[in-house]
Image (tube, rainbow, N blue to C red; front, top):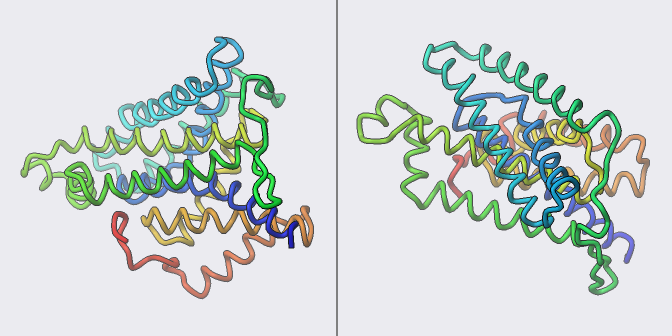
Length: 295
C-alpha cells in the first residue's frame, strides 16, 4: 500500500507537468483557433533559457525560472506577430497556420539543438532545490511539490482571469468574432498577443518543471510534452482548460502505475490505449459541454 501511494503521488507530479502544458495548448487551440505544433518548443526554450541563466549567468534558480517562463511567452508573442497574425489578417484558412507552426517548430528545435548540443545537460545540484520532504511515509521531492502547486495555482488563476475579468470577456468576444469585438471597443490584436504570451509562458513553466523533475535539459524536452498535452486536450474536451488539466494528471498517473505494475516498455501504449478507448466511447471529449472559461 505504501508503494502504491508513493507511485500515485509520483504520477500526480508527472501529470501536473502534462496538465500545465495542456492548459497552454488548449488556450491556443480554442481561443486562437490554431493547432500549434510548435508549442512544445516553447516548453523547451523555457527550460533552456532558465538552464543557461543558472549555469552561465550564475543566476538564482527561482529568478532564472521566472525569466525562462517570460522568454517562452515572448516566443509565443513573436510567433503571433510574425506568422499567425499576418495569416489571420489575410484569411489564410485552416491549413496555412498549421504549416506555419511546423516551420516555427523546426526552426526553434534546430536552434535549440545548436544552442545546447545533442547531449542532455543537468542543472548544478547546488543550484536547485533537492532536499526531499517525508510525510506519512511518502517521499516528496521539491520538484514534485512545485509541479503540483504550480498546477493548482495556474488552473485557478487562468480560470478566474478568463471567467471573472474584463480581459476574459474580451478573449471570448475576439474568439467568436474579432470584428464585432473591435466595434465594441476591444482591441483584437492586443488581446490575442496577451493570450499568446500566457499560453506560451505556461508551456515554458511546464518545461522548466519538467527539466527540474528529471534534472535533464535537452533540445527535445518539449516533444514528449506536446504528445501528452495534445492527448489531454482532445480527451478532456475541446477548449476546456480544466478538463485538459484533469486528463493531463490522469495520463501522468497511468504512466507511473503502468511502469511500476506492468512494464515500462509499454507504458505509452497502455496509457494511450486507455485514452483511445475513452475517446471512442465519447469522441467529443469528457468535458465537452463546458466552455473554455466555465465550470
